Image (cartoon, chains in turn green, blue):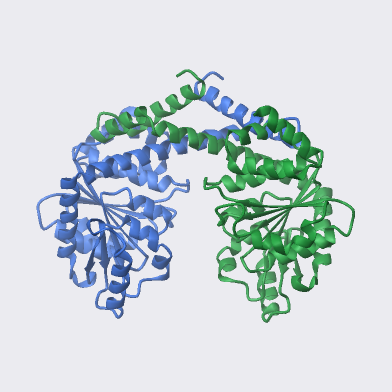
Amino acid sequence: MHEQLKQQLEHAQAGDRGALARLISVLESGGSDAAILERCLRARHGGGYTVGITGAPGAGKSTLVSALLGEVLAEPGRVALLAVDPSSPLSRGALLGDRVRMQPHAGSPDVFIRSMASRGHLGGLAMATRSARRLLEACGWPLTLIETVGVGQVELDVASATDTVVVVLNPGWGDEVQANKAGLMEVADIFVINKADKAGLDATRRDLEGALASLPPERRPQVLETIATEGKGAAALWQAIRDHRAAITASGELEQRRLAQVRSELKGMMDALLANQVQRLFEGQDAHARVLAVSEGSLDIATASDQMLDLLYDQAAGRV
Amino acid sequence: MHEQLKQQLEHAQAGDRGALARLISVLESGGSDAAILERCLRARHGGGYTVGITGAPGAGKSTLVSALLGEVLAEPGRVALLAVDPSSPLSRGALLGDRVRMQPHAGSPDVFIRSMASRGHLGGLAMATRSARRLLEACGWPLTLIETVGVGQVELDVASATDTVVVVLNPGWGDEVQANKAGLMEVADIFVINKADKAGLDATRRDLEGALASLPPERRPQVLETIATEGKGAAALWQAIRDHRAAITASGELEQRRLAQVRSELKGMMDALLANQVQRLFEGQDAHARVLAVSEGSLDIATASDQMLDLLYDQAAGRV
């Protein structure tokens, strides 16, 4: 099994897109094969750049991403797109429509498009997306766009793990965006007001710039306007992304962001493993006996907690 | 220090309310003294009963609780009240008004009233409130009311750790209540529509009973009406609480609830301790070196996570 994964990885690294797609499915499933594969993925220093594109459903992100892909592909190079949908239970669900809409680019040998959906384990989607990003980097894809559907916590987690974060709004905003305003302000590097031909553009720009005024000038995101259905503004967005990349590379902020990303990802992995171990411990007799003892008053809960942690450490160290 | 805590506990158990208040402050502060005190607290089997009272701010909970205390004190016995306010940064803050309003009962030797406020550590308030509840039980207080301000996650966590949960609404509901409807439905044993003389009573009762109709009859909460400012309905509420207690005691559900409470509290304690240890580990050089190595591509993140967990276990076992 291990050998087979290694072979697939070699094929994916040699440019086999079928192998790449299969390996992403492995990461998505989150099983023991995913854990083995993870151990084969190392960062390539400076080897890949990731752009997150997030915003409320209906903001026109997919159309905007499609227009953006057109701009990216006007120059030589390859680009991967991960479309992340926490609300879709399976890979082939809600995003199929978006993928069809993308088909002009999906046919290009320089584009790899893949939707990522939840397989039901909490936090699993954000982790799988980060792993897929590492896989793409390890396979030499120089640029990855990560499009998230919605502005909930999972989407913000995913977006905040990218190098440049684009937040897409519409004239008039939306309830969902208003509710997550603080979170969006915190992660956005570039704001795009898409559907800029719709009523309410000026008010939205005023609202947005008012909210951004509290940030120091060097951290204040650019605000762009696009009409994605007509391709208007896509070139300016691609330029803004390249400008942001150049600026954070020169200032050293990119390096700090990458360290912060690794740090948070490493912590997330440890937290998930520890939570699993605690969960397993609570399914056993040792936990049940202690819960009973505390409930009956023959043991205090702090001592019970200490004893359970000792059990956890012993199990982890293979001494039980 | 240990000796002093033990003495205070003995005094509190002998009925010294000053000592009891000081020990609750110790638990609230969450330091090493709190950990020591925790180890002295054991459940008394069947020795205490806890009623949670929750609902949106302005629902009239404090007035209702005051009326309820009047009913409780009409019979012989003692009662403690913990008023929990996650939004208040200090004990003597927002709830002072409520405590003043309670003064008729606060003067009684059979009543102990205390507000609990956050000292800034996440989840700390819910844990401190549970510890205070155990302290009250260990000191022989047979009944504890826990009033929470608001219907957010912390409040629901606190409420769900009590034996009978009363949710207070008003005619017309409120936005905050609507947003947390599912959570409230899940924890409520008794619904109270307070301010029942206000417009919209019938519509609220219809909405509520419509939402509750999906529950099996034996799990469907009673819906009561009160006008707390006039004391109307308080006697019926106290009777409903006693009926609920009798029913879950007879059916064995109380025992199951207590086990589930201990289980979730024990898990919460372990999670908090592990999170602290991970946090400490990330403040050290070992973590920093690995984050750099992953970032530079000389180490994969899954192996880094394994190594960090081994360090954590070694530190915990005192081998480093």
